[in-house]
Image (cartoon, rainbow, N blue to C red; front, side):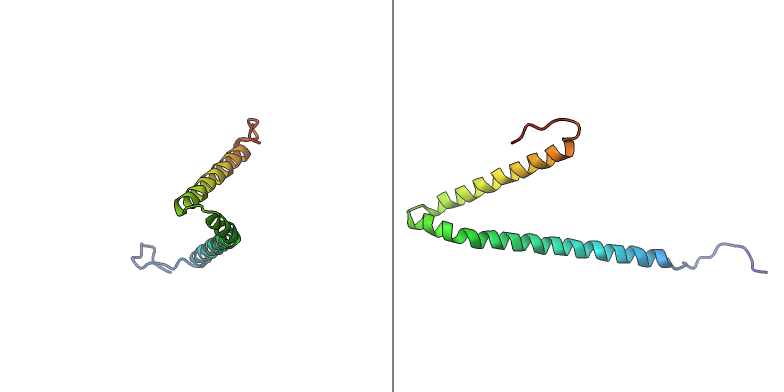
Length: 99
C-alpha cells in the first residue's frame, strides 16, 4: 500500500503544457503572418505612389511639401479608420453619424 504524503519532486505538466505551448506557437505564427501582410501592403502602396511623387517633384513641389502631404494623408486616414472602428463597436447602441 503506497504511503500518502507530499512530494517535493515536480510532476510534469502533461498534455496541458504541450497544448499551451502549441497554442502560443500558433498565436505567434498568426502575428508573424499579420506583420508580413502589413509590410507587403505598405510596400505596394509606396510603389504605387512613386510615380505620383515623381510627377509632383517634376512640377516643382519641394521635399518638405511632399512629406507634409503624406503625413497629413496618413493622419486623416488613421482618424477615419478609428472613427469607423468606434462606430462599428458602439454602433449597435447608438447611431453613428459618420459618412
